[in-house]
Length: 199
Ligand code: ATP
Ligand code: MG
Image (cartoon, rainbow, N blue to C red):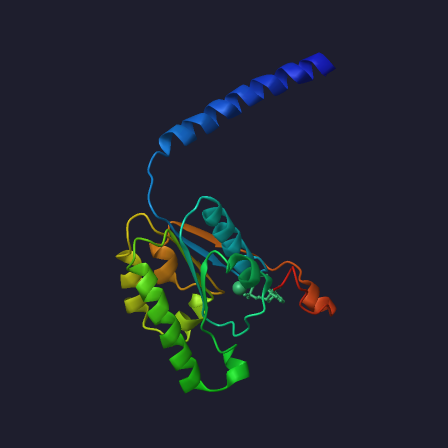
């Protein structure tokens, strides 16, 4: 095929592609708050959620973040985004670290109280519930209570939930679900958590 023929075919293909994409964009006209679930075993769930925090703040939106498992308050995301977003670290660390079910249950309840307040307040345009899935799976929180609060939140409010193994009841309610696969992770090659990348 000559260079000219190749260019003509490419141009025709792009016209068809543009028509297809323009039709899809024209069909998506609804505007409402979304429930987004970021799950899977690969790296990138919380950092994606914090990317949306940055976007929302850039639009002048009020943002709330609740970190359910993490106990540390020395993360780059909190230092930077916590200046503008309302940031709560309510966790006690992973259950295999705390080894204390009552303490974990109390921490979960504390975090949920903050989250429930945000989910009832239309002033919050984006709410991030980081690592919430673990508390649903380990029955630290009642899934029915959580699902009810999500389903009845203000119509314009976006919610992002992160954590591995999102339960089916949650993904069924969600508008967008991304499952991040774990193909490779530097930790398994002996690299410790790196500031700026992992926290
Ligand atoms: P990140 O906060 O980097 O987006 P994440 O939210 O997807 O990660 P978590 O399960 O919350 O993943 O784990 C947070 C920490 O564990 C980060 O330091 C991350 O790099 C690391 N991590 C995530 N996935 C893996 C994995 N598959 N193997 C080893 N470490 C991981
Ligand atoms: Mg995470």
